[in-house]
Length: 199
Image (cartoon, rainbow, N blue to C red; front, top):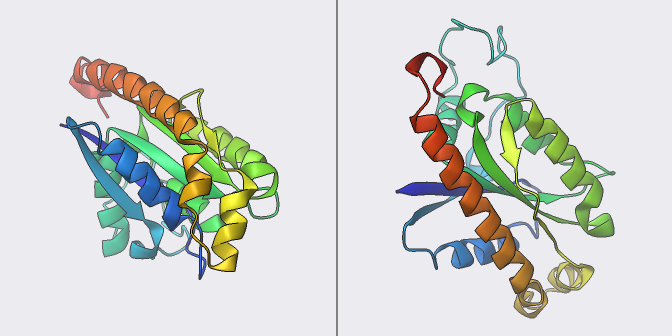
């Protein structure tokens, strides 16, 4: 089966990110051929990157930290990703950048989509994330979802956010179709790579 992982890119107390992540999961589960997983960075309390060698270094020793090894395995098992990213001071959260930086080859030649929220619906954080994912060779699909302010403010008031998210159901469906096309294409291409170049 094709594995799509939804990554919650915030660990802040009282975060909004978990609500759109679960909304995305419900949409992905409409595709019976998918194995859909939730990767919550709260469950992967990794240290800030401090390894003696970068993950891209050929022949580097295995990671010593158990949580880093578990995170790396989760990325390796995934064929595609949906990132849920808030905007902090015109950028993505440090915890998400750190999680990306701990992994290298396991990201290679896989597809990702971005769902953002915050100031200007997270436009700056989404742009920064797209630029960052170029390094580990992740193909970010053209379509994305920028969550409007209404459900975010509803969350902070303690109100239901489902109606606000439903307003962009159509955008999410288009983004998922885009992601699955690219995920299938890249999965097929990876399977046909010479072993020396396979991720």
